[in-house]
Image (cartoon, rainbow, N blue to C red; front, side, top):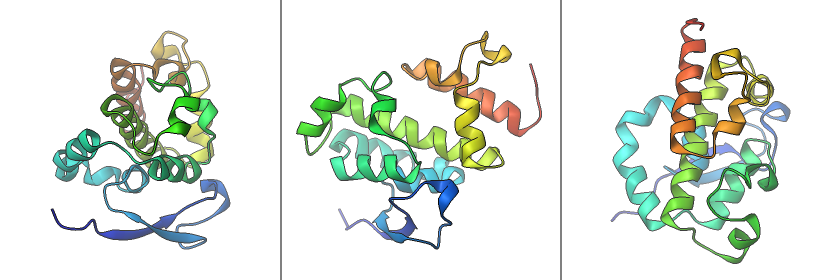
Length: 163
């Protein structure tokens, strides 16, 4: 297997506070942070993501993702299949945890692309939606089905198809 390609993206700052050219460092191609910035490339890299999920996401890649989307780990505790304290003890995460991390990456990538700003997307995630039975989209993200429902709703918003 050849070495991963490096690309440049924001790291360690909130999206709303910096552009891609500001405060940048390199991250591995196909890492969770890379996925946030390349949502349109999804069909071409899904097989690579399966390999990455099976190998496990590294702790540093998780930390980079959290920083790049302007969030805190604690916010995802109810979404991830393991506790944040358990994650802090590991260097590489299980297949289940890694898969959820990539689901988060894909969803945030799509949301950041569709909404006017990352802050608008994050606000939408925590606002009850009539289309989702008056549930907050974020509250549905504790299962793969929930991710599918929320992703479908974002695509409906993208194409102005309202429920």
